[in-house]
Image 1 (cartoon, rainbow, N blue to C red):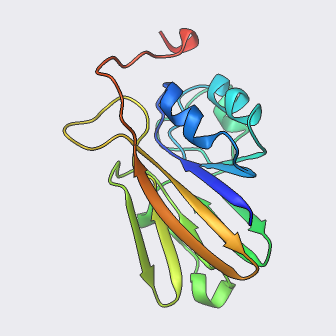
Image 2: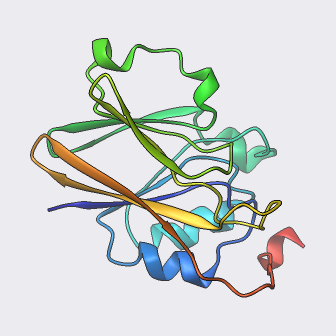
Length: 164
C-alpha cells in the first residue's frame, strides 16, 4: 500500500521531526511556501517529490516550481496547489480523488462530494498557536485514506543555513 507523505509551509525550516515522519514514504508532496531549494533536495533524498510554489516562494529557484501539479498513485489522482481558494478545476469532473493544499497553516482532512481535501498545516516556524503538523495518504487501488499528525517539537525554530 503506497504511502504519500504530505508537508507544507516549511518556510525554509525542515524540522527533524518532519523528516522522521516522512522517512519511509513512497512519494512526498510539498504544498508550497517551501522557503529554499535546499528543502526540496533534502526531501528528494527520502522519496520522489511533487512540489508546488507558494506565495512566499521567490527567486530563480522558485520559478522552476509549478503553481499546480498532478500526482497519480495507483488509481488515485491527486491535485496539488498552495492556496485552496485558487482551485480553478472541478475536482469531480476532472477525476481527482484528492486535493492537497497548504497556505492556511490549519491542518485538516475533509471529504466533499467524494473528494478528499487535505491540508497538512504548517511544519515550518510556528505561527500563532497553530500546531506544527504533517499528513499522509495511504493508497490501495482507487481507495485512499488520509490523516494529519501533529508533531511534537521543541521550542527552537532552526532555519536552514541557506535561509539565515
